[in-house]
Length: 511
Image 1 (cartoon, helix red, strand yellow):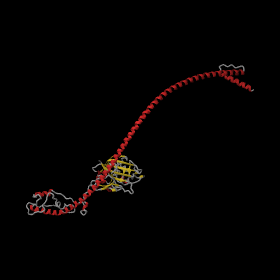
Image 2: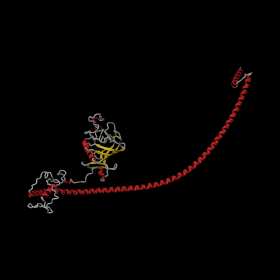
Image 3: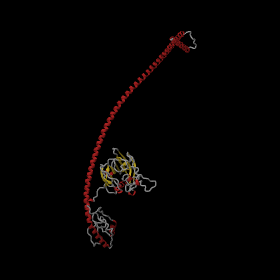
Image 4: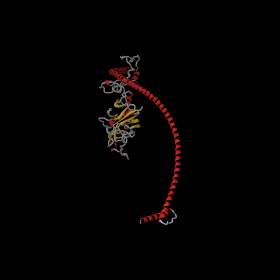
């Protein structure tokens, strides 16, 4: 049974293969013959496939051999070309290496020459520096010697002036006798020529002698009218001069009316010590004058602005050429002074020049009136950083214009925080002159209650305008803080809620 099944399966397979490979198939007589024919056809197919495969493999082998030969020839050719290029590059590199070596050698020689020149120039600079230091020492020594000589000469002049003053007092005390003699001579001359003269209080009561002698004296020029010392009442020629020429009535009248001179008087109460009214050299008007006199060390000096009494200020002689008069100084101190003061305090000035102070509006006007100044502000924060701002023009008007300020020409690293103060009037707690004070103006709003920048910014006086960006007179605080803007600020460097560690503003006359 199994064999029959296998024979049937072979018959079916043979029929399928034959129908697939041949167009015409005739059914065989028996399954065995079909299998035999199928096997023979398969063997023939295998032979054909093997032959075709061998032909194709031979063709591919020949093609591959030709391709490999072509590639080998091309590679050989390229290898030759690359070898020639490598040789050329090698030659070029060798030549370049030689040139580089020669260039490095020349550079080394030039470097040695430069080192030698720098060494010699350094030695020359060191010698020049040494000479400058020596010359500076000599100049300072000569300056100190000159100052000592000036002081000694001043003391000598003071002694001589004291002697002269004492002699002047003695002369003034003797002028009473001369005045009486003068009166008697005038009465005699009047009686002689029968022309009585009258004198009012201006001739007597209003004129006093220098010093403490308040004796009336007619101001006849005694230097042009000299007497022999005695007078003959019966003489018809009148008083005679040293030259022997008689003095006529017309000459006398001319002497009385034309040759008038007022003697100097004591400037203070006559009960004071007379020796203190000696004349000394004028006090410097500002720190630039102090610097020009040869006093080049920073510190407190006494100056006298034009038309004002003398006062002490701090002079900065090391910043940007020296000669700076400090206008307002805020520094880190153990105890700080208050800057929320009245108009009068800001006019006359307050504080200690060696610590914190304000120079005064009157002094600023006296120093800058008719003499343009420049302004500089130096500041430091609590992290140790510094900045500065300089202005090429600074002036302060008088009290009639409420000390209006003009400040222009900014340069520096801190930013222009004074531009909003330009052409503004000064304001304090008791005198509000800023632009925040609306005063009933329409469409005017203020950021502070009452429209006062001074009250809103901690009470310090300043040229506020519309509450300016700089606040040197604020309350001393440490670094950044929260709340109202009341610290010492320079808005363009640090914002309005950062109080600086130090802020010093100074002025100097323009060259």
